[in-house]
Length: 434
Image 1 (tube, rainbow, N blue to C red):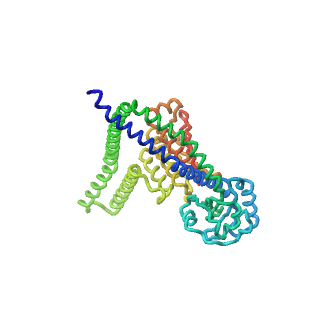
Image 2 (spheres, helix red, strand yellow):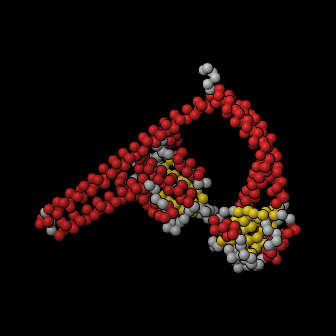
């Protein structure tokens, strides 16, 4: 009896797997063919997106919208050398108003046709879209000799920021063949995998149950750690408030209360001095509260901008006698992912400056170059550290280097740290600027 009790669920599971094999085997031809076609269309969108960003946008010149012959010739040269071929048989570039400013079929240049709904959506959202070309449309009359075509389009921008719609035409037979090859190739693999899965599930059932229990215990441990970390953070914030803002506001309250109860004992100079001192204390409290707000809930970078967000980060350094300077162009705007990476990297680096460096001065610089990259540098004149100390601090969780590298990698960039004993520390983050 002890051995039979767990066999029933395993047997039911095995029967369900067998049923799934039969059902999936019967339907896989249809679904995999559609999946293969969808993947081929997705690949076509990827190809067009790559061509748009790697060839078309770099080849757009000022005056292309106005029909400048030199701008048209430059784009035509790039298209014929790098775009046209067996995979792409026609290229068109449209204005949002429906005018063709470029095509490898020169008779189409200057013609105007109404954009369809999907093309307008692509212009508005910035996402590539694909559909089967309607060869009966007047704008597609020169493509009829190619047979059924897949048209893929997505927006590009001229050097002065004007949006255009880049459109490629690819033979649909290539898409169909690619889809068929894909599902025919993977169908036997799928069936074999399902058969193997059905066989091994019997032996893995007990292991799976044990892993589920272990996973549940790990989730419980992580939850406890998260609760503990939240409690520690709340205690830190409460301590900061008590030791700084509450004390300062208490002093302001006592000073104003004393002045209010003994107005006769104050002359004009005393009142002025008292008001100046209390105003300075109030401003100091506001700075500390703003710094705590930044720690609790980082600012909306899109609304506030990086200059304001970085200014909030360096403000608390005055509390520990560290002079901070910020050098950032007011008009600098980065992609959202890059702005988040810059903010998080600066936040982590400045926390380490305040906690570990013993520095007297820290400089924060952010600039973008002409290569489409933005560089953040946080440099202090503190005690620095050796590579061994860096590894030790990282292992102890103080420096947060792994966090910085993960944030930079997520944004498509990288971070470097240079330091030497007595020579300060330099943290450099490079992320895309466009």
